Length: 133
Image (cartoon, rainbow, N blue to C red; front, side, top):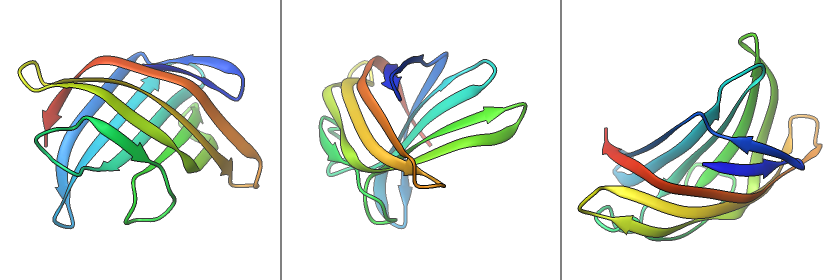
């Protein structure tokens, strides 16, 4: 998983794609973390239309009933940056049910706690294994 965050390259050291049920709805937690100093994590919770076919487009919105995403920056364990994305899209271009993997692309716009805009572009992920919670 990789992207450009605020004009700088970001590449996940490890990724997670996990399906689950929350409040009776099928969900997918898709995330990636770049380890280092600071540690940078992209995290999303997608409301699935069909828990047996994950492919499709997921529009990002703020709010508990919608698919959502954020980007966190931690330095020495302390949160030094948090962007909550209010718009954007995660597209799962391919779901391989036999191998249980997903591939796709994403982009998002949002703001940090102070109201400063944050942008994530050119996001890509490929062959991420999907597990069930």
